[in-house]
Image 1 (cartoon, one colour):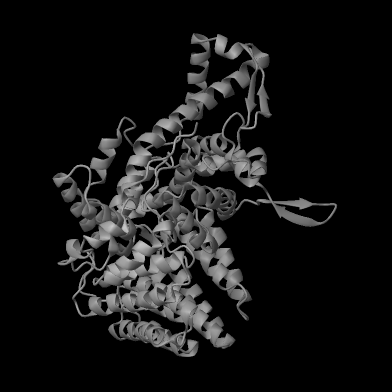
Image 2 (image 1 turned 180 degrees about the vertical axis):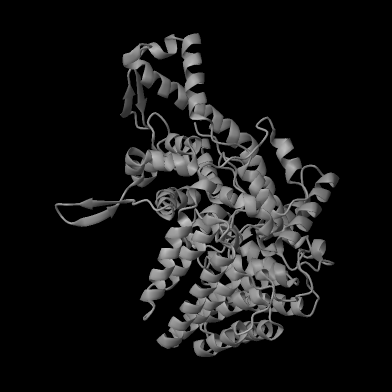
Length: 618
């Protein structure tokens, strides 16, 4: 018989419990503007109640529920799923998500009506309306609560734990406004509550421009254009005036992003000439930065490639594109001297506790570099030598043929048995696959998961974090920056299903991207049809293995092959492409290691220049 899963503590509260508890008492003195801090206070109060009665009290059950609701991860960019689990473990266990409370909406609605704190009220009203769209009154209350949070932050009555003296010019305020506008669009764009939020968002955009704050300008202008709060031509003109003399703290990536944002504003206002001018300005910023850093061929080539792409489709720029492409080829000729291999010293004996200690008092960027350094791709020859040694010690394990079956019992791969020349090669591959599977399980269960969970506990991970970092990576094509960022954010958040299915297809494209940067032709010409097709990852490994080895090192390419392509092995590329995995597979060690390996490939090239990265992502 199947065992019934125990009810979590945060789902045990009842209406009777609520009648005996003041829901706001644990947070009465709080000035926190983020719900995670409220979650911590509720959790502490629940634990204090259990010290009085270990069986739990009405207060402990109510506070457990409130801690779970306020502790959910806020994803303002995802209109239909704005809240997710704060943590998901590799065995499938997770913290609360909105659907867990579907049978408790009445209770949450009552709590929302009693809530005085605007942060708590916004979270409760939003969750209830998310679960029951008929409760339009709570949707309106959520919009008002989000508005109140921002106003209180502006006036200094609420504060974010990380905030400085910028007032409301922080990313969490942008996210609160985005969520309020999403709800407002659903319940009535012209309702007074929605109009108030729209006006507030515009005011913050104008204030950011007045104070010349590059990053907040980007945030609130994007918000304005996304929801068309102002005339796009006015937004573009404001950005244009700022970019005429940008502030010193606006790095090249911010400036380029603002030029693209300006182009978007002109495009929305149907001013194609100004749009093309802005794309040209962005391209020249990229090209200028490349020349300033031409001592690093890999770094400069990425900016030149971006500049060429930026000019794509811009009339009258054919000659400039050609000149940039010639310059790119000249710079790429020096790349093999820089990136033929990636090496990094690390202590593989570190246990999970050592990893946690290593992460203490580090910036987020430093922690991410520590995360990718917890393991390294093994030397291929060492794998072969170890396999042969194991076969000599335990010959019976290699004497017989081996069949590999899927979860339905179908034989999907067979290897020969024997220790002679006929079967030795396949026996060695079998042994390597087994040893590598063990290594990946140990690596994931130990340092990778310890580092990932520690980072998630101490930082709010979003796609913005990775976008700011990955825009420097030569492994990540600019046109896929957001997709990579989403994949890595999902990985850090523990959403391994999304991470695996986002990142696995991107690996193939990035391998081609890097090879093209080195001047290699990664296409195939069909003489019969006179068409060209990009090589698949399998074809790259079959026909361009030496080029891959020279670019990424034999150890890295072998690791990629063992994880994504080889049978025996998880063969994740084939499994993902053809829907052969089951729901639990992405939470397994092979899949988590695969996501980590792609993260490593993306960040390792940045390690030598890690101290030059903008402070905004540290």
